[in-house]
Image 1 (cartoon, rainbow, N blue to C red):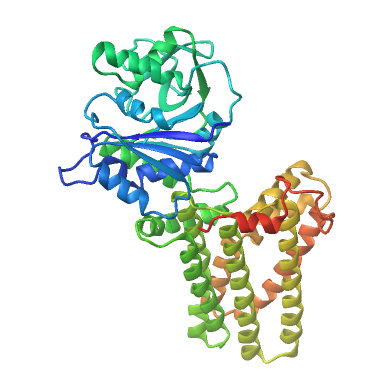
Image 2: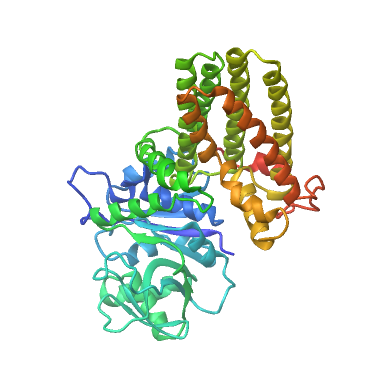
Length: 487
């Protein structure tokens, strides 16, 4: 596995520059994050910690922006290429004194899914001097005319260029290189007075020393024009959808939360700060319904459903800004459960004030005991079995268990009603009942739902309270949380 990366950020980006006073292209933001910062954080998530950043045009602005950013958490070495207006091979040559062994080469204006970078970083070392990440999806490219084409024989590159009449894949601009690339580019520079990275890798292709890493399953985008930038943002927002989203989340909550996130992602607010704001909304919902007065109950019901919708924003911002962490997951889970607890306590108090019945008192007591037990179950589940801090890990795990036992015993009917246990459904249902002035019914349904949920979880996971032998990474849970970086 390689640990070092070179990021070329020297060009002037004339195709996307709006005016001479515009920020340099690497600092142009996509979903609130500068292109070059997105490249660094993506590589960081793939295991890279040491970066050589080659600057040129308005390099002082790029250096200042990255040097003052404590959230990066990586080692940065800046190199200035005085010949930045020539081919990009000279920028790569400028990094030569700082490179030790094989390294990753990235362009500051390319976006990649983290898993694409992980794949090329962690691939088994080969005798190839050059490994190029390629995309074999020939019908799924944003700008075909500008794309660099690749002709392959087996898994090896034999020709590369923008004007190839026949090709098998696209060059994604992500390379794993050996230091021998410097000698080749230096030789070409001496012969021609200039040299591009494509000139260098083309030499190895002719020599049969250029392998490939197929990243066709993952997103990547070259951001050269305003149109490409808009397309990249569109794809990134589309990626926020989760397979665990229920019908209401997919068609109502997620469209609203992503619309809000489009605004929030361009502000200095962090994902954790958004979580805090959502928590306040959730706590206020419990406060209002506790009075039992219709107007307050309506406000509380609306706030509870609003908290459910806004709950997607913190995760969306963390994903868009590449700041997701285990600590952030747990903060979000604590926020959710605190909202449930306060709202249901408020429902119990409000329902009692409306009905004045002893039955509601006992029902509320048993419901809150059941909720406390459910919270314990979920905490144990996440710590010892899911190795995660997010409740979606439980949903995913239970869905897999249900698929394996489809149609057997209780799985035959729990699969049909599990949608009612999802937050998007019961939050909307509770808001509707509050609007209809049926707060006691919210209490009755909460009693049934809470106790049914912990029964179903225990039925699916009978060995829940048996700690796993070890976590997936062989580390104690507490140490993992401490090591996680804040969102």
